[in-house]
Image (tube, rainbow, N blue to C red; front, side, top):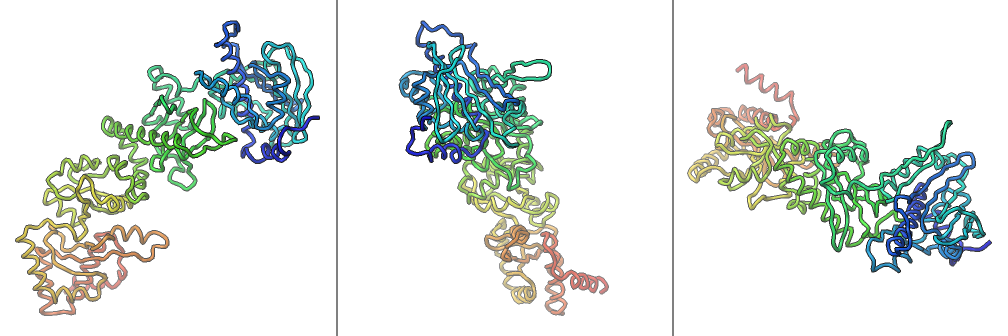
Length: 608
């Protein structure tokens, strides 16, 4: 028995037990090696006119044998001589494919998958013995390479009718290994990892009546075909088969990049969120292929979090992979592909928004929260990318609009206005919103808890500030009106101070901005009333509260009533103050800390 030509047997043990995290990957590696062997022979036939080989005859054959407990993978590729068996299989990390690619590096159309020379040894994860029978092209001699693991290997003469290689795996005993002899399981693994190998992968299927050969793989991936030759039905069928979604996607994005960096991508925008999309269990990422071989099921680095709803595949031979081909080395190529993909997705969403608003609204209903989170979670760093994708409900138009549409129709305004609440109906009924509507001003209605946080981190859109109509920063009065209001508040200072005592507010003041309502709550500072409600609902909220201001409509009869009470009955004034504050809290959707006291006060007022 010959020992492996490596520094130690520990290296072989590392190959089998440590480099690969998933046992089933062995089939991908052996099929890839078989594909490389066929590629080499095909390339020779293209460069040597004396070699007459029909490409249609090339194939990879899979033969499971449950009775013998063996799995055979055969190819009719270039094969190996005794010396090549010795060099390629007897020396760990010696790659014949890598040498072939290096020798022909100046020539085009060489798609060799293997390059590290360790994939073959993944077979020992599932096999107790590995036999390789190989006959090199244009030779008469076949040889058998046999190994049962780290102890070493033997080579002896054998027989094989034609050139090519048979790899015979004696599958280990145990339930976890039995699956590798099951027809259904093998088909699934081939479809998962090797569906787009260039050559037919045929499997020997046995039943009670006959043995037949069935081609398992799809050969040419959809993303490598010309877009003009692919029907919408084919795109949709691929999506449903690949991603197990039986609702049609809203859009597909099929792109091919050539030049210094080459890759193909086929991506889809789903019509709905998956059941786990907004849960912590959801894993984002695109399927990553290298020359049609699946490398990663979900490559998270290819897509930003805010576009994590996108499903699809990326196929590139330019990626730098690690030794097991299960992970990517972080490099410029990966980042460049990810940047390009982000641009493609955004452009497609903008096109949908402009050309097919009905579909975009469906998209927004499903994934709008994710776009908003992309702005908020990045502290506004991604606002330039995502701002034009945002949509909000317009008070004037009573429909969803983009920020661009809202800004264009309100060019005369110096600010952009919004109001937040628990529902559209509740927001429309806010005194501040009714007052804005009375002045023919449009307001973005925001019933989602994240909306105001998004506006806060964005700050501006096209040099105009976002302003909450329920904040104290709204200034719509003329200079004359401001002066009159200031005079009223100055004259009523003692009245307003007395009202403030006993109320959880920073200030009580008269205002001109209410239409019919007697009172409202506004806020001062960065924390609004609506933000307080959101944060109070969260665990570990640290009791964050807004600095509330109780505003009293100076034109409402209640204003005169309060002034009369201040002169005649200050105790009664305090009671009115509590009721008005409770009323303002209810309008904002805030709880009342002392409902029994307030209802008793109201009853006392009613019977007087």
